[in-house]
Length: 182
Length: 295
Image (cartoon, rainbow over all chains, first blue to last red; front, side, top):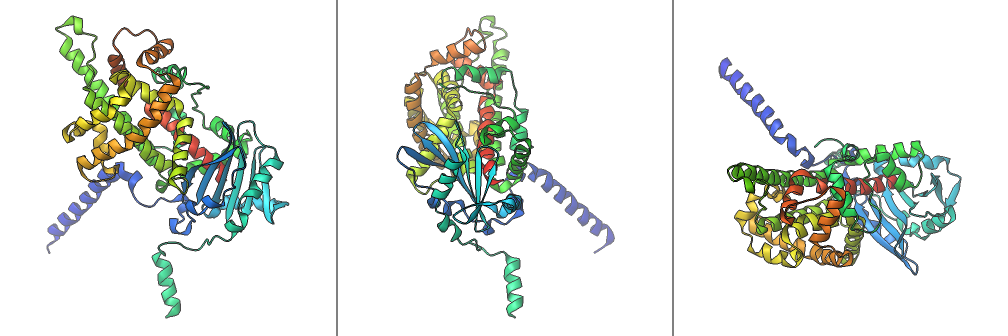
């Protein structure tokens, strides 16, 4: 291949790349990837696994699920027309900072460390992996009420959840495994 | 549009026609509506505490979540933007066409010809579908059963009452008359693929709608609107919404209006962004509720 032709091919390739980038720019939001804290979603426990662990509503109360994403599920605790609290379970694998606050904790519920965040939020770290939180809404809740709600979650069931990989195993882990066994 | 959800929230207007129109509608809905444009105020409201360190860490988490493309917050906002841009473009074009066409006929100068009823029905159906797609992008599919998912939708509807009332008034009752909701399914039944393709928002949303081809999408629009219609007919009855009351409420906030109801609808389409405005506020609240739970 002669030298000029090589330059032309290189130029065309570079121009095509540039054109593709410009065309694809508006679609950046739709490209795959871009997970929270760059943790692959296969390592995060799906929110649907948390739903059945929420407290059973007492008489006059309702638990309405409002969000369910990878590593997160949230419900609202209602009493009649009144909003009492936000209840949530999240997988802290995407939020390592959230785990740090529990090291200073001196209170426990069913053996798991408990912290207060501000005047309306109480959080519990279960199995060093799942954060359970109650945030008082509207007229608010005192700490005893929030702790009672935290205790009503199925904490044993939550601790027993397998935080292991679900779904596809990342390729580099498979390759690493193959090398070890070889 | 660039930026995180909370940056978008802070860029929303604090005054102007959009805010006035929403204030007008909110007088028809019990409870107070606030035009929340401060991220810190929203976070403090959700947390029930105004400790600056806590607020800052919720904000960091919210920004990280909305930057993650996989989480769908950006997608929800771009859906709202697509609908909003197409609504404004269509409204503006109709006004421009009328001004141009009316110059020789001075008496028709101020008349803004509304679009055909079919196109208006498509516009409403696209808005409702965009709303549902955005809901699943932001909230996932909450609950383990269909009943729990339904409860979750109703909960969202109650939370977004002013948004829904604005959509019912501006996009159904004003342009299509007081029997708009009852007649909507019939109107959508008459819509063909060529009508659908005339609507700019459809071209942007087509890739997101389930099914392939215009006919499948039309079917989705009709089925998607059905549950919303049931719910919103209830809201219309409960609040006693009519085109007349909507115009009165708007006149109280914006000023007197001399033209017809449908002309007012064209004017609102062209000069206000109520759909995207309340959409950003709704997404921001759900995002902050999640971020507050995850810090």
